[in-house]
Length: 289
Length: 322
Image (cartoon, rainbow over all chains, first blue to last red; front, side, top):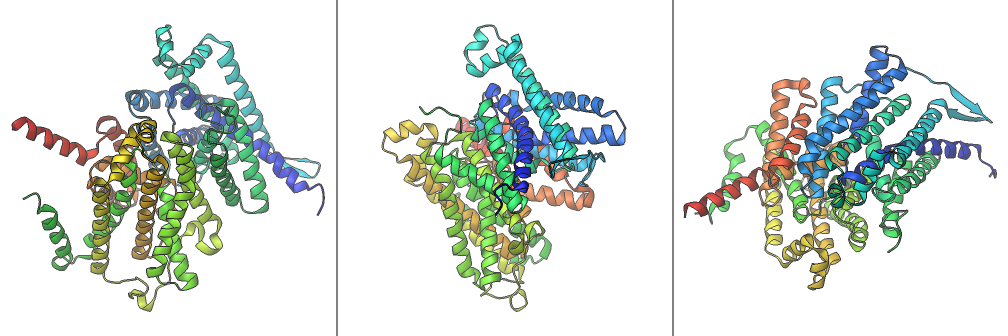
């Protein structure tokens, strides 16, 4: 048994990269939850539409990839606004579980709309990024890129939330939904901006995921649930917790997938989640009261 | 007259296959009855605000435990199904106990149970050497597919009567819950857990009871589905889409009325069949497209579901006329 296992190290590094993308996914969901207090069960399906957008723009219509990515980010952002205006806004006063179920309906709708519009075939970008070979380990360039872009995206969101007036208003609404409208913050406008931002983050995630994975109408089911678990584990609405949980999950999936199949990585991650619910039901980062 | 209505309806349903023997409509009826039972099982706990997205997992456990015990141990489903129910119940305790103990409610509970249906799906897929993975799994046929020992029947009529009996039993459980102290306790809990606990309701125990009941019933639905269809795959009996489908049908039919889930099953299955027959393979996806839109519209405009709203309307018009 070697002390220093190269495969393990490779899995760990890949886990960190995966963690970056998962952190980006959970950031969008956390933002929506923290501010609007709604869980978008259909979040991964928005990403799926973004992935299709990338596929059609880049592979079918040969739009330059950076422009295609920009269009996708804006497009999915608009989808987020639509989702909020059409589904969430009429339900803001209803029981939270109804909002969750309504977005479940949107999940069905988006999945089958993709099936009807694009068919069930797997599509990919047809773009092969080189694989880096560092010290005998294979590191996928697309993962590295995804990791870097995810980090940049997160930093930008952080700066937006902390350094701009609108960002301050968003954080204020997240702290107290009742009082802030009295202080002259237009809650409806903030909700729409947050939905757009959440959607745009889904769009960014789509641009990065499409580099690594084939897109098909049910692709959302392969990373949607894990995103929710990350958010719950990191305490819904807590950005730092979500960030930490994303890396913990990614490592479990990556290392578990090294020793057994990839599905076992997911099983371990899910099981870890349930065990953590016993141990720390308020989430990883929650302060004990 | 209304007192005898269930009995008359029941008698008509029992007599139906002896009068009308066309296999295809009978097949649809059996499928509707089995899913109605599954949806009723969900609504037994769902109506108290315990929205579980993990019932796909319980259904998968019911189906796969029964089929695996039959194929590998040669254990008759007569013994395998009770074991499957036990497994479903145990799984429910394992997940629900910490949830209730640590007061994970509302969307947190929904998301934790979502994890459960994810786990069951992934475990079935990962153990593909035994379960066939996502390609599906078939219980071995015994004596040409018609044997009481193996609970396999070639006759659609037999299956219809079994499904009818189980469905009726499901409704009976629903009524028993409706008339029990458990229901009062759970309604108090769904209003306010602290207040309920203060009046002496054992919150965790009461919630756990209904969850185990609901999970075991759902596992039975899974086992029944497996025995009838003789083919199960992770996508049709477990996983998140099945869980969501249950919630959807119940919400559409009516979550607070006994026949709501059944109405939901009738509507969803007929809709899928009509679309499939009239559009053939082009209809792939259209049924879910319609479901998705309907689900959103129902939650926004008719949160009590079709049957619930109809009954409300009926009751109101009776009050105003008298």
